[in-house]
Length: 290
Image (cartoon, rainbow, N blue to C red; front, top):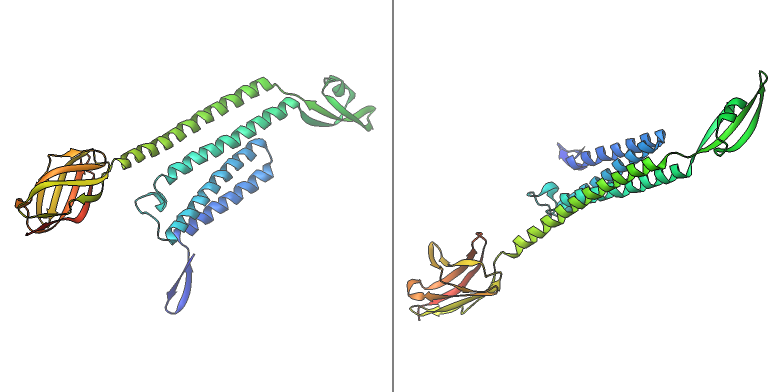
């Protein structure tokens, strides 16, 4: 929420972020209430998954607002967060879904294998005799109605767990494969980005940093990731001198320079590689008149 002044009166208006957060919280509350009232395993699992995802989104919105308030938001990236944040949320969401689904399925199969209690009320002797004796755990007499004795019976019914276990195993396998694929994609993308970033040339110093006009000599540039550099340029305003005859390694580059072709003054040194990545040292080389 924000405040603004209009003709001496203070008005409160909602920002888009506040509206989004409010809608998410409202949806979460509705899901929790609905799941609590239904109290079935399927509804509870669905509600739990939805609440978990919404909680992650709320946390993401909170981080976005914090970044914006500190002036750290980047308009080029999704939600203004650092690059890769959304991919990380997707990976974490899938891991969260995998964990909750696995625990739920294991619990359901385990409970079904141990047997579920069923209450039968006001049944006749004939119905009671039809129940398997191993399932009957408690019988209580209700009374006699129309010359028929009635009972309340508690049974422990064990289902066919083999089919349930197979289904649970298949679902967990599918979810595990999905989580592994998404995680591999996320970390693989980060690794590629890191590799690209590490190939950018970086200049730190030049030796020598001054030469006399008319002198011919060799300048050496020091830095990082310089082995892919294809060109060295000296720039002074609109004047540019280009050098392609280079001796290079990952940490330094050497090239011969004829200062007779250069005007006196300071020159900016620029290096560029085959990918178009550049770095420069402002006014790093001075040509003196002697």
